Image (cartoon, rainbow over all chains, first blue to last red; front, side, top):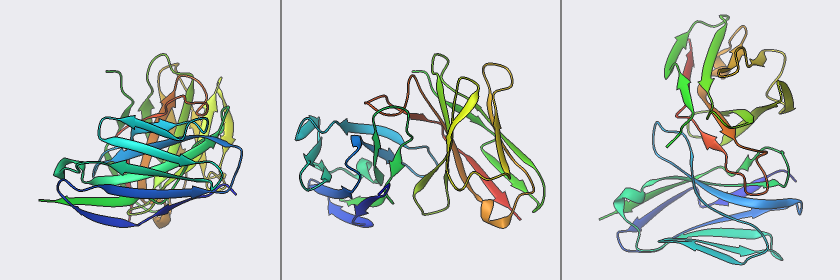
Length: 112
Length: 116
């Protein structure tokens, strides 16, 4: 119940294309869903996050789509660039002080 | 921009030795965390710390591990009697309030521990 399942494990996208990464959860107590971006040798950095009271959140080229009934959320990267090549982790936790639970990560490679 | 800083960036230690990883969280943050990432795998929660005590810990965080905030600015993770399987990147993190309800958790760049 504490798991967040993430797919795909790796993704190759052409420059300018759309990258889509999916996550699913089971714990209905989760109410905060961030995405973290991690470059090699660096710590995860918050990219964008959503609460379940909205179905979509957009920040620049990054969009989270959230489907509460299906318990799924996804990250869309529009006009993907080589600089977006990194590992992306979805995460979730309930409100309060419970720590984040991370998905297994998706290694994105954007090729020119 | 304030950041979480960690030292050392990389440490090699012999199996059975004790290791202390150090972190300076962001100054006005109240919650502190240690996470671990074995090479190529997901980020795993170890422990959270608030008000000078452990608030939550995972199954990974057994008696081999301990945390301390010795002086009001540093936050340390001690690993006693290291094992080969402790080799991983250890991330310190902090947040101004609890990690839920949209309170961002900020991660340091990690300390890469290699046990030989």
